[in-house]
Amino acid sequence: MIPYELFWLPFGGTAAALAVAKVLSETLLKHWFKKDFKHFERKLDDISKRQEIQFSKLHEERARVIKEYYTKLIALGRRFDSAHISLLFGDKEKQQQVCTEVLTFADFHEDNQIYFDETTAKKIAIIISQFLNLHTITTVDIMDAEIGEIRGDIAELISLLRDDFRVMLGVENKTASPG
Image (tube, rainbow, N blue to C red):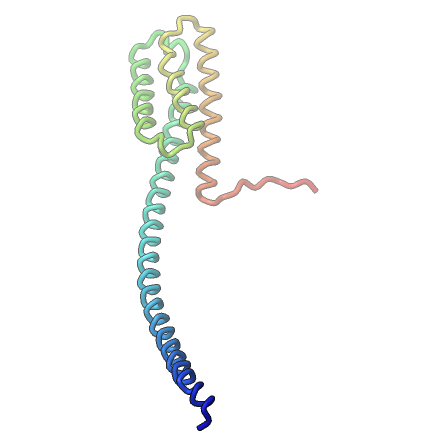
């Protein structure tokens, strides 16, 4: 063997050993990372499924609450549509019934306002306040105006809740397009 070939021989042997070591370590690392990746992927999938179930339950609960708000508001609106102003002034039993319904609605609102954006929750609170302040009004004209305002606010809120519920269900309002 020529001396310069002897010089390169150890490097060639080392290079081959390093190449083999590199291939083996890459294979081992790939296997190890793949195993860990699958483990973490399963964990992440489990967490994702749990979150999806929780979100689904909250979504269902919010839909139930919106439906119940809607039903209660319609009932209160009907109460004022059917109640005559003179009954509110003269009939203490009728006043007590209306007040009880409003207080029940107020309790329901306090327990469930978290399901609404701040603007909607404030609108509901204002309507409740308007209802509860009716007993302080002493003239028929002012009472009539206040009841009219409450009816308008209820109609607006019912529309808001209806739209919110439809959006939640993925139902879009279809409007006729010109042309």
